[in-house]
Length: 264
Image 1 (tube, rainbow, N blue to C red):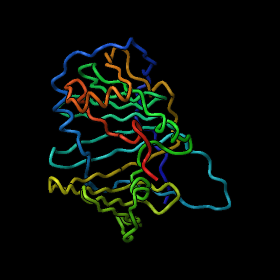
Image 2 (image 1 turned 120 degrees about the vertical axis):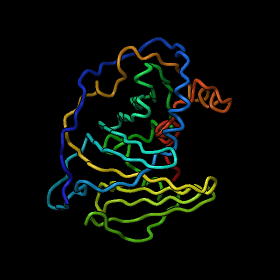
Image 3 (image 1 turned 135 degrees about the vertical axis):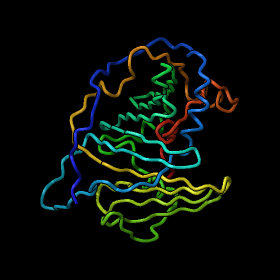
Image 4 (image 1 turned 30 degrees about the vertical axis):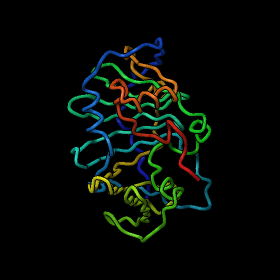
């Protein structure tokens, strides 16, 4: 199997924006967006080969950039997410009810904003999350390793679209998580199944069209000009969440990149 190196469409008009620390305008759509996005999950057909061929005689070059298209299906409906990364930087885009939700991880800041309403949150990341970064490890698509770090175990091998995969599972008081991952050094997730014991519902998530090694600039991982951000220190943000402040209802999709890495 060979990972495809495909040039996804990228809008080059990304420039750094560092506005004042100011309050965003009211945005009632945020709560609906959060409901649409909570528990991203999916089940779709695997579209492209994803695993790299092994050649022990050749030193493998560092892979700086990654891209994947992600389908999610659950009680809230179907969502499609596009994710790019450059070393430890991440940009993720999802459209829900006509609103484009953008997540950007760049340095010590976690951005999430509604690109249609031009409002969002900018949260300072935890030192532990920053310390866990590595330019040799992509910031997204690490569900298998997170599950293993939390005590999950390999339960079987499986095949999707003719590709051999390993299957890992963890069951706890919250429910059950199952991850299908490629049998290679990249350990690319292909399918994820999440069962919630509390709601009794099952959600699905599938990665397709994995690509890497394409050209992308650091400017792509900056918010667009004109976004009005409400800025928080992490502790302040958590306090507002606990108080159910409606201004903080935009969903956080990558908790491990905001708070801390998965437990050892």
